[in-house]
Length: 322
Ligand SMILES: C[S@@+](CC[C@H](N)C(=O)[O-])C[C@H]1O[C@@H](n2cnc3c(N)ncnc32)[C@H](O)[C@@H]1O
Image (cartoon, rainbow, N blue to C red; front, top):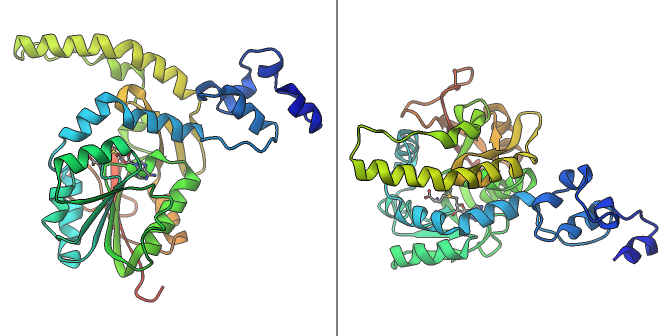
């Protein structure tokens, strides 16, 4: 292995020479790499294909049994803001072609097919695609990564929706690719609707104490027992994930990558400020029309206090003459 470096005139990373993790390994994702050495090879300039850590962590979480059970059982709106956002677009996209990105176990299938039978769902997690097809056998659901939707022609859909903060699961460059794909596959005048975690909201501040939510002791004793057992089971996994993943937390101008309490601190996501999100949409050729929070059905204006919103629902339009 070291010969690869010497032949290229590169210095072998310490984790290879000394066979232990170094600070550089943490910076280069070694810690969470299934193949530790690949990340180090890449860091040293070798041309090796690796899956970025964020992708690897999140894909692992979506495939877990608990995520499959949960996403497969979800029904109805996630929050009042989502219901309001879909109501806002409803009349403009009724009976038109709709694309539901990151459909998961299919929560949004009945919500969108009641607007239009011309419906397509996609998700990059094969296990969730299978569950979704089983839950909604009549729906068209494809296995696809939102960063590359070249299977769809330009100007195809009137609405592209990526619900429940799914877009936050990819890194910044992946996010920009997804927004460009939205812009490409939307018809002129079409709408993109997606939710994204608020950089200035309560979930950005969640830490390990989140794992210690005591069960409501006034509830049914069986439920208290189940909740307590769940907490005891989740605690060590949550603590392990928290420390493992929070090493990859990073703050940038207007957004941050940070471990999220969901899935026992099992996902690493992007949190965004409103202004940055608007800029990203502009860059992708989409114009922000309205923004809702998750706590109510009220629209959020520029300068409003957003500190209580866990996430935003952005609605943006592709101009008629792009
Ligand atoms: C939080 S879950 C939401 C699932 C579903 N939309 C719901 O609301 O119940 C996020 C979903 O997005 C999917 N996802 C994340 N990144 C994706 C990508 N790049 N391409 C396609 N699907 C993606 C995941 O597989 C997962 O099913």
